[in-house]
Image (cartoon, rainbow over all chains, first blue to last red; front, side, top):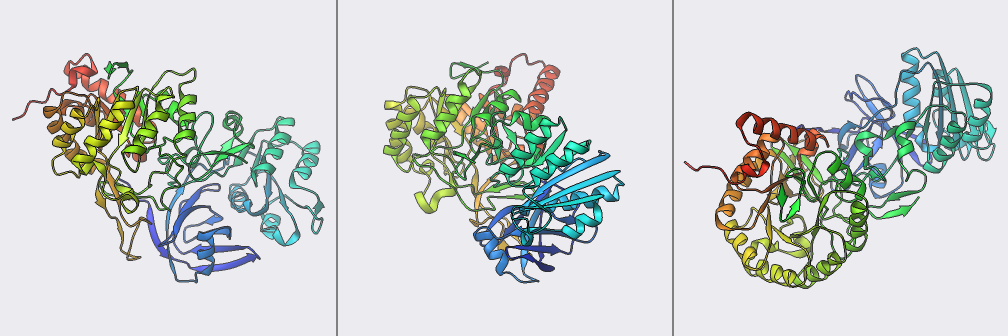
Length: 264
Length: 301
């Protein structure tokens, strides 16, 4: 059967803020924004991570320290070996001419990647709204400034940009302008709010979803969504508005590591 | 065609352990062309299973050490109930217990559900640390567990056997004598290990796991043939089936229905639709009118 795995040393580690680091690997990866890789730390475990950037010479992921595996990863140094499988999953579309992106917290790296790809493909008009709780949690502000025609910022505490959420700013922008598509990546409750706004303005959108994933290749069933058996690791994690409309659990529930249904 | 008295649209079946946690994926696999679906093995209590990586791919297939991840029998049967609600499809509930008494308890739960068949997973190779040697390798355990379950089960039971037993046909005969209504075979082979040479490490977090995929098909065919010649109860064949020709071969060896698992890795969920149409193409070309015409027709040299 096809072999997807490559084992390689960490090339660089960059501290983004108090809880986020970017890990870079010096090998090409044919990946698109929204796709993910499975990262193994031998003797520890394996988890999915979305891709920050992928070029002909390297790829990278921005990772938040949230559990035992990332804790171990944050103790590792340049030159230590990890193992990567991928890229897996469905990426964001790239055909639209007028694009709005709405991102929240540490889920913005795929949008940074998407804005870079869209800029290279000569998108006509690109607007990004970068939201976080506070200024120090904002990621890639200067990159979004560089790649986007309008680069907006929202913080809950008003420490930078608009005081309020990215979704508040999104509603304001949609009052004035229309877009061919909206790309949304953030915590699920924030995405649910953003989807409600997008629907109110009858605009197509794509969201970047997260569910517990164990195999990443559509066989273990951990990430399957109700009620239609959508296999998120293969058919997502980017989901368009048509498919999202069928996923009744979006914004409400998910399944835990054993497969039990839990409220979000 | 029929399997153990139930009408099934095709002999293709989802093997236990693949995509089998939720009602939504089970229904989807029936819609995609399977005649029956098997749940992941359900235990009395929920189980997280092993840490990842839980699958390692190699040239001949996969090695997995999922470790019986499941939401527990009660939650699992809620999914089975949802599966059957206003939906046509045959379900096989797989259960795993640590001893005969647990299998009996599990069976009593299943009795209260709309499940069509009960599969006894006597042969999981991935929980030996916890549960010691798989029951399918111990003649007296096969007899004890199947006898105990048969006494309480209200639905037909399938005993899932291991290819690791010295005489699998003898194990099947014991299961039949103890009251099994059918045999599911083969579970994954081994233990096997996939090694990452750069890291000097086994790929699986659990170091080893059960081998599945194309490389175990010849073994499955031989063992199914042996068992077909020894027992009268039907066989749900599984082990390395990836396409229609594989399924035809397995039925010729003696399987009454054929389960697909690891092939989902290479061919995606389409594997059921594709395998069904490949089977039909073969059957039309070679003059077989019904799936059941294939069962056991192999002529030995």
